[in-house]
Length: 398
Ligand SMILES: C[S@@+](CC[C@H](N)C(=O)[O-])C[C@H]1O[C@@H](n2cnc3c(N)ncnc32)[C@H](O)[C@@H]1O
Image: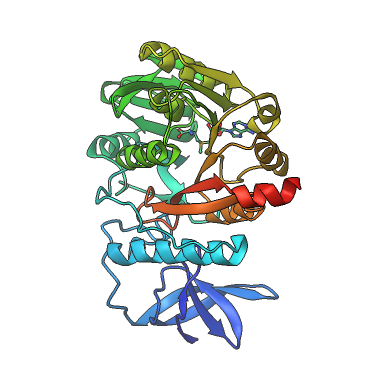
């Protein structure tokens, strides 16, 4: 059937109406017309697939990557339009779900499209990705989001016998790390990488790779989290420093601190920094990073962040939770702690909005800045500054 796309949804899919029913169509842009086939029909919505594009948007670009639905949902959209789409999407989600009255700042971005320092490849004799939201395997010869060095590794891998391999992660920092789930012959691969893990065993090189962020050096291990886009991470951390506006007589709490990057960058602006992180390996890295950078006013705690806030004292708090956001207990404990400033870093605007809706009882949202940490995908990072509202505090305590 023929449809016209009304707008993009929050996952970058085109929305059209088919007999009045909302229909989501991947790779269709606003105002484009297409012949589509319905591939899934549910009570309240359909999912459709383009059979033929009948009328192209002037915002359509030809992507460098030939694979459909491999995870870059916006690669066919002009980059400037991608940026405005993300600003508008964030504004709409905050208005709808957080009900806060704040104008989202201009999105922070750069033009590096080969930004990913980590990819996880699925394996089915060849390497590839799973198609968006499914287990359909898409074999790939290269990925447009990574460096030429990583694409060389993909080329090498595709010539190998991969029948006993399930998944391969590549981490591309000052050194290269390859993490293989399964078994394969490493003879050809070996010279293209520093570190290799095979089935959880270190079989080549050092256990850690390193990178520099700002003026600090960080070790990154096999399973610890590290942001995927280095240049925009530095911009993100600059905003964290500015929004927290540290003082040498203050303590700051860095919840969900990963390998300690934010804590260590904040150390020179605060008297004391406390980082909390659940992943043991990440905390080990954080402590190594603290020693390596000769920093002595930071303490890392290995614990569930939402369970430790109660026992701590701090003037300011930064949180950077996973996509699921904060817990209700975590939010209540932050409210009891009464920090003067909260900086909330989020990679999921929906859970951010949900959490702001609770935090706004006692905090004003003073600025929201989107960061295009994941170009060509619908994902974005957001940094939100909240300030304790004196009036609201007065009202709740009297
Ligand atoms: C988005 S990452 C942020 C890491 C760090 N702030 C950075 O910029 O690299 C979220 C981190 O939260 C950790 N995490 C997940 N659930 C947690 C929990 N309940 N308590 C503490 N940390 C948790 C993850 O292991 C991960 O390192």
